[in-house]
Picture 1 (cartoon, rainbow, N blue to C red):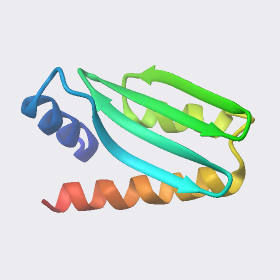
Picture 2: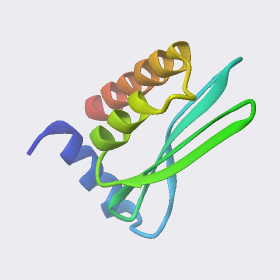
Picture 3: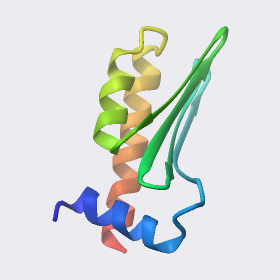
Picture 4: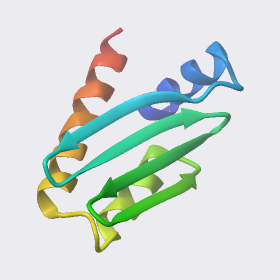
Length: 94
């Protein structure tokens, strides 16, 4: 089982009906959140004058979509991926 799959399984085992913030990146140009829910990942991104919300089967799918959202500035994209990687490292070390 891949580390990300193990991590997702651990979250589902805790409470399958609860939405949990996994990563929340805020910059002066916008905000990106990855939320874990009942066997899905919700991507919520927003900035001045725009907002996006979508559900995905994995963190990988959500980050791939984030890369293609034209409203997301490069700085916000890079910082959100850095935050997500740090959070994954912390969770995998636990």
